[in-house]
Amino acid sequence: MSTQRRSATPKKNRVQAPADPLAARLNHDANAQIIPAHLRALESIYFTAMLEDTHLYPVVDRLVVMFSQGLLPVGPGRAGAILYRYWKHGHDRLTPAARDTVYARAFGLPGGDAEIRANKKFNDLWLRFVSIVGMYSSELQVLPPAQRTVTPEDVLSSGRDLAFNLSEHGLGLPWFAAQDFKPETQKIFELLSDSEIQTAFGARDPWQVIQNVATYELGLRPNVARARTRAESGVIIMRWLANRRARLIRPRMATILSHDDICEGRTAASLNKKASLFPTDCDLAAACEQWLGVTGTQEAELADSAPLPEPVVAESAVTEPDLAESRMVEFVPEVAVAEVEELEAEEPDALAEEPEDKPA
Image 1 (cartoon, rainbow, N blue to C red):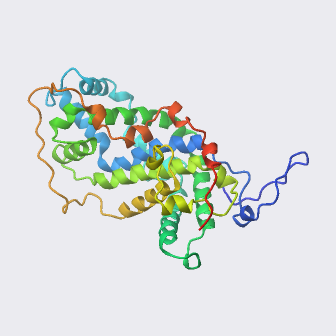
Image 2 (spheres, rainbow, N blue to C red):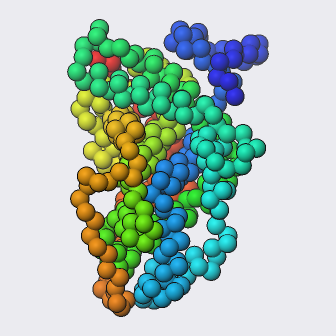
Image 3 (cartoon, one colour):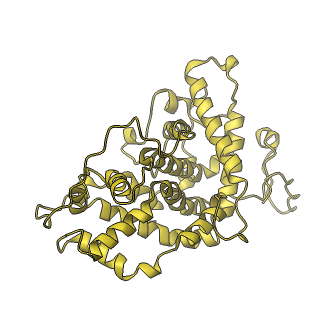
């Protein structure tokens, strides 16, 4: 869908809003739509797509094989139950080719069905928005207005174009696939957060389980930190776009980003909210900078990192209390697999209509 078409002439009986010089300069297409639910559906798909670089699914498959062969002794707790369900219903999961097809349709990633209509514009639109926000935030904090090279209109137009694109590609196959990605990702991280699994592989958190299993069982050296950063920051960026629908479509002023939020470090955490659900403009800027910071680094090059602990498979089932809940990575279940009621607990447009701070 092109975002550059001219708006159709409004009907006579329709109340016409006053001309908006800002919208005119941005060549806004009134026919294009930003549907927050479509963007939220893509969050879990993007999260999983980025974690493909960690070999997440082969790691889980290896755990299932070790469990079925008796090489991974676990007790009658949650870890064993999850592994058994994976072993029993493995044929119901999306295949790697099917996942690649979803990624291609949603984000234009390579692979999958050759006949799929891939989202070929996503990568350029994504890089443009992330780069503009990152540069805008940096210049805002160190340069006077006259010396800044990125304008608020650049942020607005690039964000709007990206949101239009995501909204268009968040229905159809990706919409329904997201209903599979969410619960599966939740179960995967529930498994990786289990104390029995972490103890068996000498890990302190789910990410170390992925690293250690990939390294010692699969002979791989994935850059887990890089993939995790891209996944988490990417979801925050999409959630910010979904929550700012009204500002993107009907801007009341040129400055869409709150200067006070960015310069004063006003994060969602400082407001007792979750950045994964209600990111502030400061959270957006930080997510863009983090995504840019890890993009371009060499994948699977960990020679300079500290050596990983040698995993020790437990000889018997762990009997200590289950600490999975306390060790669960906070970000994953909230962003990738939150329940629908929690996702829609606060109306996105209501957030978008909060008073904006005056520009610096």
